[in-house]
Amino acid sequence: MASSVRFAALQGLPEIVPGDDLAALIVAAAERDAIPITDDTTLVIAQKVVSKAEGRFVRISEVSPSPRAQSLAAATGKDARLVELILSESDAVLRAVPGVLVVRHRLGHVMANAGIDRSNVPGTASDETVLLLPRDPNHSAQVLRASIAARCGAKPGVLISDSFGRPWRNGVVNVALGTAGIPSLVDRRGETDRMGRRLEVTQIAFADAICAAAALVMGEGAEGTPVVVIDGLAGRYPNAPERDCRALIRPLEEDLFQ
Image (cartoon, rainbow, N blue to C red; front, side):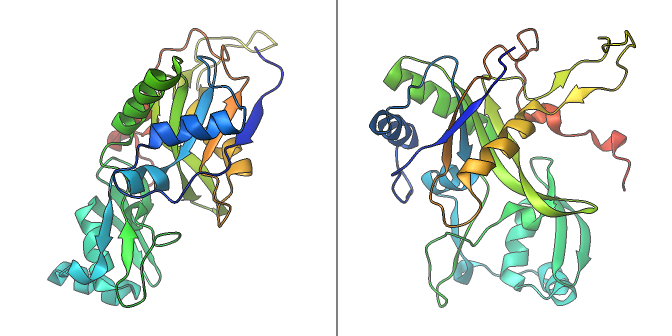
């Protein structure tokens, strides 16, 4: 196992617009920064630029709120049109109180506002635009990995990250929404600790840990560095099977907090 890991945020990526070849832009930025992309590289890519490239924009002015959205808007103080978008991206509303709307996203994630975001999204006060999550982040990661491989001959691990709040703790941390080429969840049950005790519950959210660490150099505001190149993770869990982010979502029958 590598004793050190190195993180480098790619510089100079342009503002991403629908239809951009994100893989080509990443490879070009890595070449400019003299940062090699190899089979041992791991890339963490902010969800926002993936959604932008995939054209996941919606103009608020084009949304007609339903009666349910209007009711939830009154309860939360949110724009009813935004609430309608949140409902369209969700399977269930879990919490609706002033200022807070927590839902189960159609992809299975429990999150505020279905991940719909306004920050760093072009638009004006009179024609506000919001950004939705990718339709299938795991597929997006797979496509990016294949496209990067076609351009540089290497197949790095690819993670798509987003910032999440957490119950009972303030602040946000980055987690993985989509992965390709890495084990998202590493099951160590059945192994033993240094004292010879059998591990009974230890499962490591490997993809989430990578994304949380990458956020330290990616940033959460106006940094403009949405791609992080990581070296030193190869072989971290050589026997763990490759599993995408669906492995990280706890099944409903195991949800202890509803």
